[in-house]
Image (cartoon, rainbow, N blue to C red; front, side, top):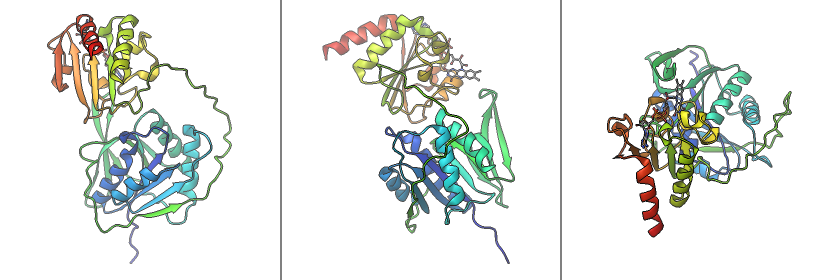
Length: 332
Ligand code: FAD
């Protein structure tokens, strides 16, 4: 009797010079989901990846394929191209209609996911959590819709599927098998294919520290009042060795560049500490902060929703508190 091959769950990780724990999230999620469905957990890495290989071996993934690094940084469309090429060609890793491809949630990961789904004729599931399997092995996943106002469950029939994931309590703590010997395969170098059009990018000159990989984020909301308020945030962040973020209204007002927006339609950040100033704490903003991050909130409204989520809350007007704080920091 012919049996179906086990479901393969792939973590797809482009290696960049600044990798954060959020970028490695697909590895842990792949292991946990594969365990749940009795399938195999695999990873495909693009770039010079000793840390990622070590991470994958520690998690007991079944196999890792490494695509050699390119000379320069890759754009999302090139990453999707290389992944599609590798996934379609390597001998050991043939995927099936059951396969699930995972990328790290975030603007880059989600662009890769969409492009990859189109190339592999796979089903794009969007940003998902809670992968579950019924007794017949059919997968269902949960995702938000309408700006987080609705949570829906998708019953997944015919794949393969591509999903963006982030580290969560459920998925980041898989049982680590002690019997698995991860097979590491190095794929031959292939030049990224020429696409039908060129995307020209221009690096933005920014004097301030970037949000990606920051261990401390000082973030401001509408309560900062104007761009002078953000000048105070940049000064505080520089003194503390952190990066500046902002809520959507603050970014829309032009107080900080779009690349600094935190939240559902902005960036997902996972610093150790998130200092939220003049931010009310809407679900759309909080969706951009890793659940393991410690939140310190400064808000003049004692009933602000953010105080329910903050580890430390200070009821104060930032215009009084920040100068005093900066003054104290200057003394140390
Ligand atoms: P407000 O909610 O107006 O809060 C301002 C806070 O500042 C108040 O709590 C006030 O008490 C406090 N304050 C005022 N003055 C002072 C002072 N002097 N000192 C101290 N505190 C003060 N939002 C995001 O941030 N990121 C997203 O990615 C995002 N995506 C969205 C996607 C969708 C589909 C939708 C519908 C909305 C999205 N939003 C997003 C918007 C979100 O719903 C809220 O409107 C937004 O998060 C509110 O930002 P805020 O907290 O800065 O402003």
